[in-house]
Image 1 (cartoon, rainbow, N blue to C red):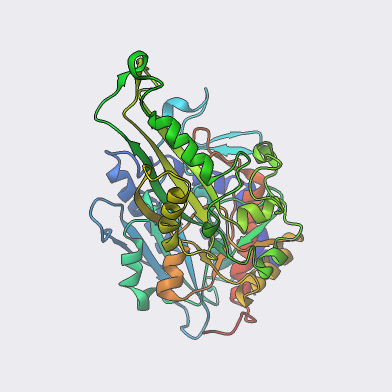
Image 2: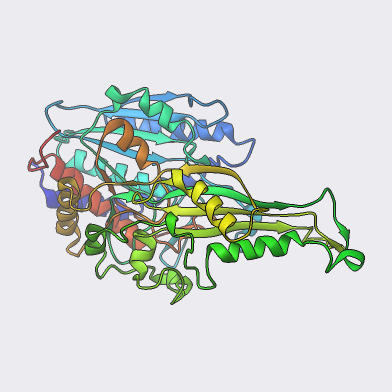
Length: 466
């Protein structure tokens, strides 16, 4: 007869004894980057050699499928069904990573070798997302051991290998397997906590919309001495166009891009007192940047932001004395479900025309990852919050959506599940750059939180089934 305390103790012992560190080291050692050619076999190896045997030992039926879209990584599904009458949880994760950037890591570190230093585990994928889904599965294993091989609920898993390429193919894959993947709730982990010391539940993610702004005036550059001051400079035109889109303090001036009724009351309520940043991330919060009158939490979790991801005119690496023929900026809007991205391009076109920038073209508009949100007071969200607070003996912050992007919309649209994202990382983890790392302290809390969640799922008292 196992106990909840016994399950948490097992998870803690595995973590504190080095078992999880060694497990993560093996996962990090597989260079499963989805953003570099030549590593396709490593995407397959991660699922076939690292994940499938582990899941099989826990009683899952496991399948590995080709991606519906050619050229993108495979997708693993697994199911452990004890009783169809009991709740079914859908887990999600991704085993692919961004580029290794080997030469950019500081001395003594390597992207494909786990290194422990001062409470941090360095390695590519340690935070995004190998460490996060591995914590959840290790917690599940501890609960199974405490209950003598039974869980008391059902678990399904989707583990993809193309998230760092926009989760291409995942929507088609899930749509074709609605029945096989049907569940009562998605409980999974990715992204950062609001603060390293604050356990967090996010009920969705902001979406990402992209476009290019282009000023193209001639076939080639013209001599800056002969023509400078006489011919239009496309870089200056583009700079002024951008300045008409946001002011000098980052406030969006294209007001049709924003939630029409401001931050929704339910979102504002759940974000009251919510911290942002912490650790290294606090240094990058600039007071007064963005929408006036909003708290930092409302700006990042309840509002939209406009970012210039890249700008180019001429040849910065080798300037010549010429007025460039064109200028280009790749731009992004991070948006919540309170705005419709279908209106972004038309609103931008109207704005540029009204401001006298008819020569600035809007090209290649697209949504890379749609926004999603489950109501922050949804019964499954509150149930998970109570379970985590019981396990960790501390407050758990709920946010309406994380600041980054995840494919939660796929599971909402095709499976109709509420979203409970429980991030184990923090926003200073450097997940898309060199020196990516996972903080040991929050990771330990993560395995305990999930051990408690798995235990409570098997005890009854969960929200009514759909």
